[in-house]
Length: 366
Image (cartoon, rainbow, N blue to C red):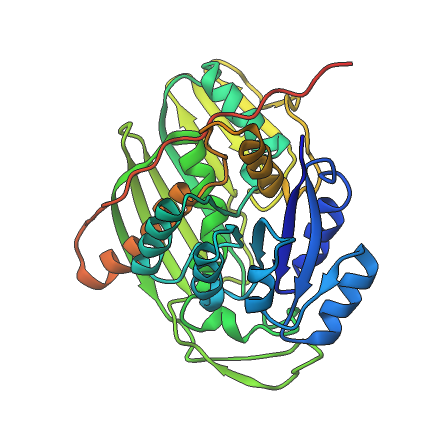
């Protein structure tokens, strides 16, 4: 297939694994041609290491002829501006999560992309890895019957003890729901379908956070967003999920994701990873059984969503890439919906819909 030329805006912490994979394991589908960053030295180092061209700005990158798709690895509050810049230049765009900060921005971006005839993708692409794709196959094959409920928990005490620049996690667009919610909610939507109604409760437990990581040790950060968010999701199928995301918890024994069916239960692996283990306990079993992974990419394969998008574009048909803007927009509304329900004390009725993407092909047995 003809390779898709990729330009990367934002050479931060997450860019390294994208660059490794897009120039390595997915190098048959894409070519990284151009990079840029607000810190020129970072862009120059990446360009030298990966054989790309460095440009001075996002504007210059999206205008480059040698860029077909813009990989937007900026911080969340910049996602909309950079993505719209790409779409208006007639380029496909793949955002890091979340798709945008505001629902109105996401709607505008998707409408503009449709008018321009370009595609919008968005992480997480962990849902395309071996672990969650195995769960999808097991569900489709009826191993635990029809899903009736689920739990999804992401709890820790925040990023200030280890992240070099943790401030934005406590600003608008941050918090545990917008930081990690996309992994958990995208997994639930991929496995159980779209949501229709939500409830929520949210709180800010501490007014400030003190950075203890080395680079900015001692800096006090004001907290602008809720740091403990709990809610329920009612799915179109009738299944109900309980979700908690928190930066206020020092220790916990909560599982990450479990799905409960009419004929058994399933332990879904960490949705921030690509592999297993996948565990099933069917009705009548006395123990959990670890299931063999049915799909490829069990290790950190960030960039898989970009590669899948490139393959769909190269095919020339209307096949929808799997880590797509429609799902990311639906997940964005769920996250806002939790906060809206918490503020209003009422259920939040979903306005967007999405289609479950096609499962990825099973790995070939040699």
